[in-house]
Length: 171
Image 1 (cartoon, one colour):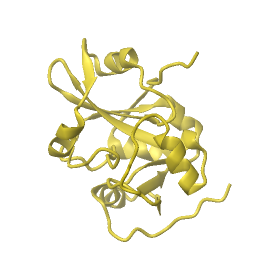
Image 2 (tube, helix red, strand yellow; image 1 turned 90 degrees about the horizontal axis):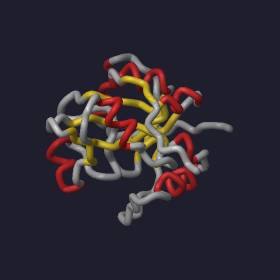
Image 3 (tube, rainbow, N blue to C red; image 1 turned 90 degrees about the vertical axis):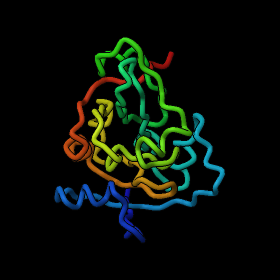
């Protein structure tokens, strides 16, 4: 598979972080039609627009623990997150996704354009271990319609992330 790298029109916070860490990455854009469906199937839609395997499109999920700590989880968008595994990774008794209307104020990102890099603050971040099975993965660049193409190990390094199993096993 040939990957095309496009020069982004404008640098995002996520790109600036990668640049300052001297981490190699590429970017690519897709048409965000304004009706960004964020239900299951969004990865397939983005992958189809980019002509790539949907398993390498990774989503960012921001969650809050019972102690009000925000944690960031990054996993393949074709899978659901396993809340039990997320709780265990974060060492929390309870964990739940942040409401979409809170996301911008807490992270600086909107739903559908949330990157695991470049949030308003550095939150504990967890990357699903399946990411390491791929040479490159696609993550949000911090705006809808723009993706960063990055080696999973470089994402872990840049995000200061912990690698763990996060996905809900499909039956």
